[in-house]
Length: 194
Image (cartoon, rainbow, N blue to C red; front, side, top):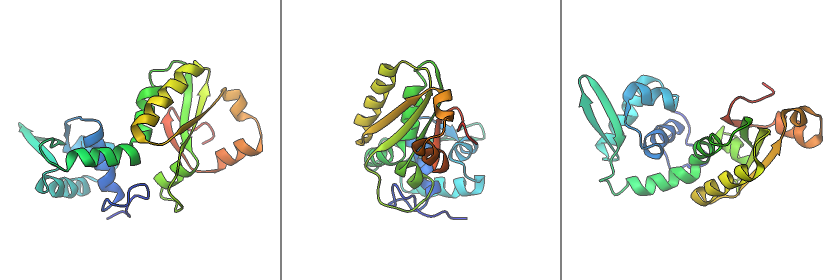
């Protein structure tokens, strides 16, 4: 079943295609078709069809190791580099934040909320101008801000972190109630209210 075009990058034919390309082009990993389908959250037949299209277009390449097809980005294609840049801006922030914040100790959980999270989850609305990030735990504040600055420069959008302890986040306030009731995309750990 074909999914709708992703709201953050509607140039892709489907959200599934964008997720698949994100897994291959942004990570640089060489993945089996089964692993690629799993990482992209696609049924195997859907991943198989999308990969076939992208192989035919020369955007992906494959090699066989025994009976396993290993898929990777085709750096020889003139389309690969521009696609990487589009994906980095549209789908990369969560993956990049996961990597950057994963190096910062004492983070219990982190998630993107607000308009960027809403568009990632398919909620219609205007294109987001920034990325709202909630970080829970007791991390080094400077390390969190440095990580966000590195992601900002790569994705061309400001990343606005709010850093709270888990206890502070559990408190009731208009702002926190709005965050908890709105869309959210996990960066590290789990959403603390679900």
